[in-house]
Image 1 (spheres, helix red, strand yellow):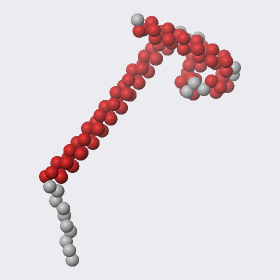
Image 2: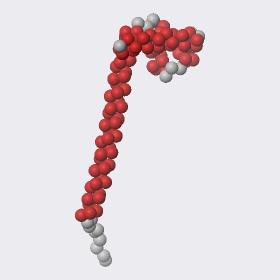
Image 3: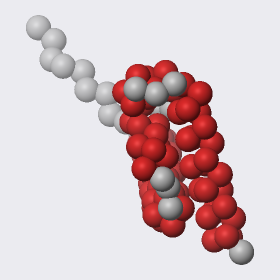
Image 4: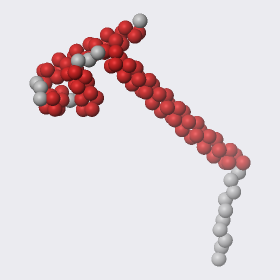
Length: 110
């Protein structure tokens, strides 16, 4: 019966293995940092949008279309059905609230 053969790693092999693990850890850290920065940027943009919405002064209909746009990913037909309005009316409310948001955004940039 033979005993187990245990291969011992040389110093060079150990160094290469450690180097490879360090590279993986660095890549992981960089990816984590990029993901954090992306999320942070999105959060800042969302907060800015919320501020613009508050300042824009939407009408009731514009506010309902805006909220449904956020929930339905701008599905005009579905929003029209939910509100009992024509698709063209929903598009008009959307155009108005977007114009108001652009104005607030532009005023804030000055």
